[in-house]
Length: 362
Image (cartoon, rainbow, N blue to C red):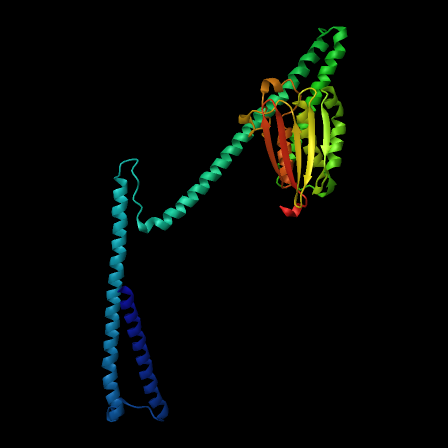
């Protein structure tokens, strides 16, 4: 109904304007043709012109009056609708204020768009707050872990150094104590190096260079570095398959070294560590398998966290910084790859790293 009235109003207004324009043009044409200005008495003497003017002016005034009345009517109608809507909003808002706690609020139609926008922005803010809280918790935990890991070797170094300095150490023990101090110094140096490495990998601006490299060659070099560690536990090392990918050799060396070293450290005496390379058209899968002690199911989701140790009492007997697998995860992410872990307590662990053959493929 409102649309029809508005259409009539527009039509009447347009007709009024057109008629007024037509009249002006008609009169002006007579004035333009005439060489002398026409007086009102001359217009009255001209019966045809007088007849036209006498009919047109009342009609034009009538049309304008109708347009004005329609404008007043539409304005009043629209105003009433606006006032009615505002009244409904106030009533519904008051009704929601009077509801008991826990009852669902009545969402009226006028607020729907605003409520949706508010809910979306609210969810975004909550997500960002949770991410900031999680990042802050990780930072606090990391600081606490670093402090603890640094403190342990420093206490040992300080204790043995004091014994030597005070003369409490027997002459035969000095060499032994010096060896312990050096060993703990190496642990400290290794921890600092890995903290620096991890910080570098977590830097968003870090962009390593990539080149075509052989995965088998990197694994064989890692075997050479870890040969004596594996030999002490009589662990057999083997590699099967080959693939070439675009990657950073230094980072991949660290990745493979850490995974093989972990497999040896937590492997059983007389066990084995196998590395299997399976290339496909787009990816290369590198599988690290051992028959060691395995990882409890509840801990498998946390092994790539910084400083996390599966069995803290047992892990303290094994040298390590607790950052190796965190570095592994970051190296895989930098190469746009994936890492998966399967393990069964008492039977062993299998870690699969999938890396794209070409960097642009993922």
